[in-house]
Image (cartoon, rainbow, N blue to C red; front, side, top):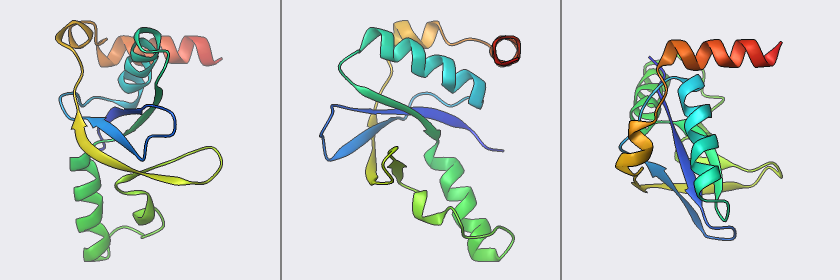
Length: 116
């Protein structure tokens, strides 16, 4: 199963910090990223797959059950300009933000309502 979290950095920092204490659906990570950006407007924030998802994908690539087209993205965030920035597993979300993480069903419903 693919799980998602967020990664953040100060602009021009040489790495992103992946939030190691949160994993959820893509829809949840999207909303958590928005909440985090609101509280930290000075940081760049992306929603990214978790380290465990990347490890699972790497094992599947090695076993030949998954194509290797995204292997270069593991451990990196690709910026809009195509540049890859390293990710470190040093990020943490505050207990206050974690308490506000939406449920997966509600997050998906809000996305579907707003996307169409």
